[in-house]
Image (cartoon, rainbow, N blue to C red):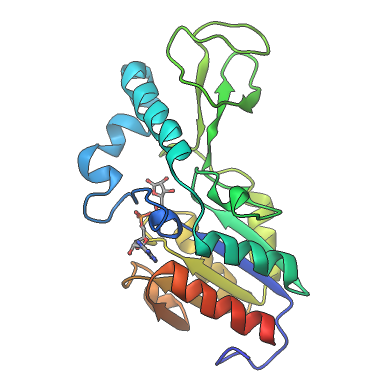
Length: 239
Ligand code: APR
């Protein structure tokens, strides 16, 4: 039984951020040494930046896509997948991460609200496709063959995240909301805790340190994702 939860939990929404992949060796965005310490997000992660300097944006995402080959899922990814497989109720996993470590950790369902590193989007035919190689301004769409129309299928600043209708409906119906390894700086994800509470859900945050939205959670578990997710999953599966 989870302290503070005196009803049978049936529907969980679990939100992850860059902190869940940190122990796999992927940099977060805002920690010391994080990706946005060395790069100005406004020069990389906006449609305007891509229009201004596509070569820089292609290079940034090519490097990050290549880095994915060097890393593996960690215990937190695997324990979340175990919860999804073994919990008798529903576990809806929504991630801000664009890596594929949840899938490689065994998660049967992952909602990538900020897109995926291993997908490209064609601005000519609007198709999104699996992408594992490097891209540049001369790359052709494998579907419509248009040259120079491909962009990373990543939700950039100023764009609307994917699957918001589904996510909001899950938040309205959940009875437990868990956030793991996210700084609570970027909206709409940073607002999910308040939406879940408005729906009457219990809320638990796992983070190495206090986030921008820690005060909205009823329970904070301070520590590394690998150890804290393990304990929480064991508690939930023991119920
Ligand atoms: N265990 C738990 N938490 C950790 C760990 C760890 N091992 N390592 C880091 N953290 C926490 C940090 O304390 C921080 O609060 O993870 C959080 C990472 O925060 P950010 O770097 O801001 O990442 P995130 O919240 O996922 O960013 C949101 O911002 O620019 C974007 O689109 C990008 O999806 C990203 C969004």
